Structures are given as C-alpha cells and as structure tokens.
Length: 244
Image (cartoon, rainbow, N blue to C red; front, side, top):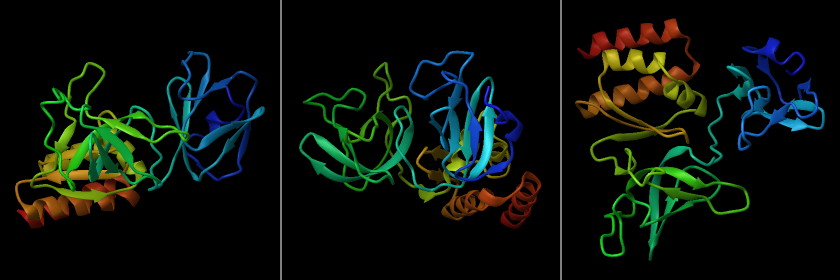
C-alpha cells in the first residue's frame, strides 16, 4: 500500500504531491487487476518508485485498492468502454463523425447499431444526439464509437433526444450521478420525476413533464456541483414548493 496515500483520502491534493510506492505495487486501469495491487485512477500517475498527483482535487478510494482524484474537471478525455452523449456533425459514406467534447471527433460506423446491415441502414442525421460507447480510445488512434454492447444489443444506446434538453456539468458531478445509490439522483427523482441520460463526457439530457420543468431540473443539477448535501436538499425543497 502507498505510504501515506490511504491516510489522505478525503483531503484536497495538488499537482506535484508525491507518495512512495514499492516496486510492482501499482498497475494501470487497462491491466488485469490483482487483489493485492493498487489501481491508480484519473489524477494519479506512477513515476519510478513514486506516485505523483497530476491534477488538483479530492483524493478518493474504492475498496479494495483503487485510488483517484475527484475534481471539477470539464474537459473530457475518452476511455475505452465509457458511454458518452455525442452530436452527429458529418455524414460521410459509411461513417458518421460525432462531436463529444474531446480534442477530436470520433467516428461511428453505420454498422455499429443494433440490427444494422448494408441494406437496413439506421436513420441518423446531422445534428442528432447519440448515446454511444467507446470501442477504441487511445492517443495513437482516432476514437471510435459503437451503439451496441458486446452481445450486439443496443442496451439503451443509439439515436435519442426528441423533446428533451441537453446541457453540461462537471465530470465530478457525472461520477456522483452514476454512483450506486446516488443521493443526488434520489433527491431529484423524488421531487421532479424525469428521464435522465448521463454521459461520462459531462453531458446530460433531461426530459420532464414540461419544458419549464426540464429547465428547472437542468438548473438544479448544474447548481449541485459546489453544494453540500443539506444545501442541495434545501434548494430542491424550495424550488419544488415554488413549482407546485
């Protein structure tokens, strides 16, 4: 275990902070995970026998041995297997170009949809929203998206967005929303029932019973970034009373 790292969980760390790491004690997220090893997530990197913090934020820990930095970062770096909300920008032959908020656009084949064949092409137009998963995401290759899972099923992915509202939040809030038993999501659904699609790239799509309620939900979620749980619950109750 890293010397002093576990004791810092929950504290704010800054770029350049270092911790000792015995040889062969860490692995990257793409390596097979062994129970006795430590996984360095976003914001932490290995440098020789040291672990260095490379972005500011709060140190988090997940049992048994996963550590990462939780920050208010808004710039998204694609990772294989993550699901994102993208916007189709170009329709060229057999490939669509999708803007997802990264440094470059991703490609999406027309065959990367459930049931798609050369004769049965999906109805995808420029400007459409797609909920898709990264199949290829590394610094040496163009990012590639698919709208099917490993078994070839859509599993909720594909073109969507009719009648809803798209907006952006920090990547930290996205992780809180996608966490099991998310308190933010539970408070929201209790007061404002709505459909919500969450992309790992910081984009959220919401559709409620009216346009006004969709705007209220979007504003509430964007306000949650810097609020404590009591502050958030108080705000939700106050807005709900005014909306009734």
